[in-house]
Length: 247
Length: 353
Ligand SMILES: Nc1ncnc2c1ncn2[C@@H]1O[C@H](COP(=O)(O)OP(=O)(O)OP(=O)(O)O)[C@@H](O)[C@H]1O
Ligand SMILES: [Mg+2]
Image (cartoon, rainbow over all chains, first blue to last red; front, side, top):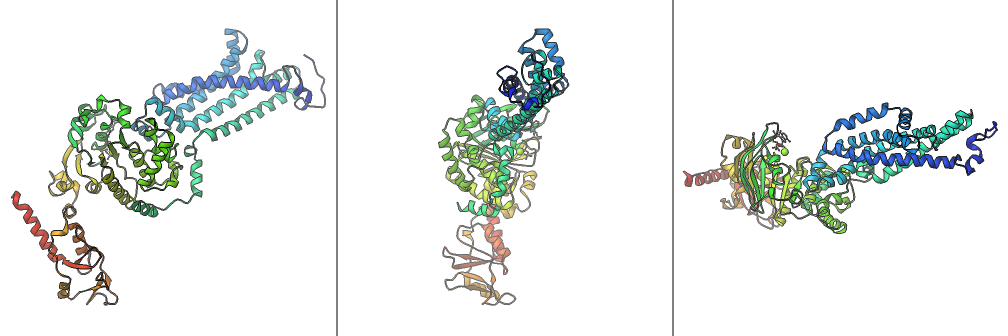
C-alpha cells in the first residue's frame, strides 16, 4: 500500500481514485459494496418473507415475529462478525451471515404486520369466492400488505448498505475499505469519502425502492386512487338511483 | 333446492348460533332469513357454502350434501355477496367482478367482457370499470358486490345484508333492480337481512329467526303478516302489519263508484280535456281554475294498500281510479273502503271459523 502525502485534492474528487484499475478504486468498491448488500437482502428476504407470510396468515408463532424486531435491534453487528470469524474462519461468509441476520428482523416484522393489517373481510371474501389458501395469500393478502412489506424491505436495505462497511474489518472489500484504510493511514479525506459514498448509496437505494413501490403497490391500496377521485366528478346518490332504475 | 336437515352450530366458546334448523329453500326463489341481531342468520347462510361447518345435521343442495364437495369448488359454484360488499381494494372493479371466472380458468378478456356487461345490468356506468373500490360510493360498491357474485352465473346465491350500508332512497333503488334481475335470472337465493320490510318486499319465502338460533316461523310474507305463529313473530313483523298485508291483495274486487258520485259531497274533481284528473276544487278547497293536487291515482291491478293509502292521504278522502290513458274512471271514498275491508275480513274469517 502506498502512503500518500496530503495533497490539495480530496480523496473523493481525485480522478485517479475513480479510474484506478486496482481493486481499491472507488467504482470497484461501490460494486463490491452493492454486491454484498444485494446478496444479504436477497437471502434475508428469501428467509423472512415466507416465515412472515406463514406467521401472518395463520396467526401461529406470532411471538417469533414480534420478538425478532427487538432482538435484531440489539445485536451488535461487528461483535457478531468477529464471533463468526472465530467460529467459521474468514472470507465472505461471516460478514454475509451477519448482514443477513441484520436484515431479517425488519423484513419479518413488517411482513407479519402487513398481513395482520389486511382487512379480514377481504380474506373472508377471497375464501368465500372459492380461493384456496395459497391463492388467498398471494393474490389478496400480499398485494394488500405490500406497502408495509416494502417499507420493511427499505429499512433492511438501508441498514445493510450502511452496515456492509464492516466487511472491511474482516479484510473484505466494499466502501468500508475507505473507512478502515483511511483511519489506519490517518487520511481523513479518505474516511470522509467512504462516509459520503455510503450515504449517497443509501439515498439512491431509497429512491429506487420508492420507485419500485409505486410500480408494485396497487393504486387502490397505496391511496393514489383516492387522490385521483377528487379530480373525477363522481355522481351524486340521486343520479345513481335514476340511472339504476332506468337501466 | 337447499335443504337444512336438523342443522345446529355451537361455536367453541359454547355459543349456540343455530339450533336444530329444518328448512327448505325452493329452487328459483328468494328465501329471506330475517331476525334480530345475533340470532344466527349469517351463520346459517355461511354453512351453505361451508364457510362455517355445522356441529350436527346436514345441508344438501339438490339432494347432495355440501360436505361431500371440495370446499373451493363448491364456493366457486355459489355466488356470495358479503355484508358491506367486501371488495378487494387492490383490484379494479372489473377485476373484482371477474374474480371467480379467473379462478375457474376464464381468460382475462372474456372475464372483462362479462364484468362490463354485469356493470350495466346492476345499473352502474361502464366508466367505473377500471376504478378501484375506494373511488366508489357505498351504494356503488354494494352493486359491484352483487355483480361479482353473479359473474360466474351460479344457480345459487347467498346474500348477506347486501343493501344495508346505503341510505333508504338508494336502498329502494337497489331492491327494485334486484327484483328485476331476479325475474330475469331465476336464481335460488338465500338473502339475509335484519329489516322486516326488506324481507316482506323481497322474499318469496321468509324464515324468521329468534335469539338462540331458533326458527320462529317459515312462510310466505303474507302468511307472516296475516297469521303470525306466535307473539314473537307478530311483534317482529310490526304494528302496521295489517296495513302492510294489504299489499298482497289487488284492488280489482273493490266496488268503485262513478266519477259523477263525488259531487254529492260538494267536492269537484277537476279533469283536463282528455278526462284526466287534475285536482280537487270546492268549498274549502281550491278554485276550479287552481285546484289542489289530487296526490295520486290507481289503476287496475294496483294493491289494496296503495288504494287505502291514497284514500287516507287524499285531501278529500277519495281515491281516484284511472284507465291506461290516465282518464278518470271511478272513485272510492275512504268510508266505503273501510266498509269493504271489513267485509273482506269477515269473508276470510268464515272458512276457518
Ligand atoms: N366465530 C364465532 N365464534 C363464536 N361465536 C360466534 C362466531 N360467529 C358468530 N358467533 C355468535 O353466534 C351467534 C350468531 O351469529 P350470527 O353472525 O350468525 O348472527 P346474525 O343473525 O347474522 O346477526 P347480525 O344480524 O348481527 O349479523 C351470535 O351470538 C354470535 O356472537
Ligand atoms: Mg349477520
